[in-house]
Length: 94
Image 1: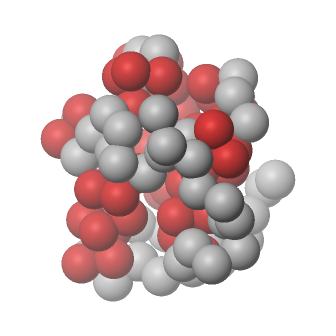
Image 2: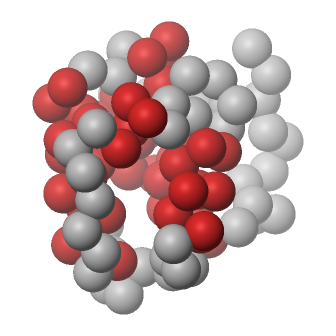
């Protein structure tokens, strides 16, 4: 598995997704490769639904519960959200 040397150069959306997923997956954020399917890190339906709830709360957009399965990597999730106008969290709870 490859690791990003620095999260500081990543777009805010990548950082937000990685930080939230790290909590749910009980991993360090820097251990999450944005191109690796989240299921390989142990993402389950509870994690996926929690992430969807956080996206709705922090970005103010409604997402389908299947979002994390339809876009199974951080890179795919970020691209999908960005394509729908999501840029930065309106208010982070973490």
